[in-house]
Image (cartoon, rainbow, N blue to C red; front, side, top):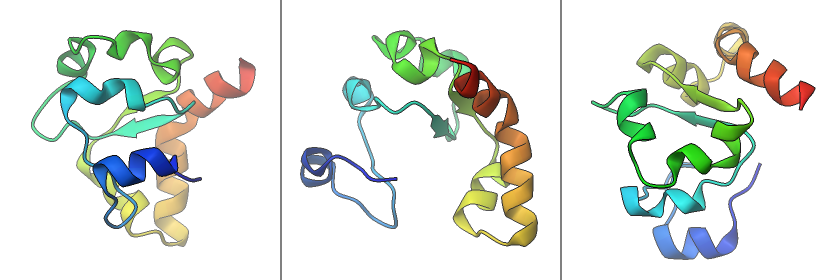
Length: 98
């Protein structure tokens, strides 16, 4: 998985992460979006203009996760990978069917 070069240049990348301001949700055009709204909720995300029209949201690929799931992605191990995939199973199945 890669990030578009224009986004890397605009926002910068650190440790595989991009920090985007809320008005740049248009840049989140992936099929699968795994997000921890640190201190926020899924409803907060849905209130952002244009968020509900993102491909991941429209096609069932939005995964709003908790801290343990984010850690499972950040520190992959034989156990955490299985845990993370189990947590994303609904979104992965939705995308496989679309």
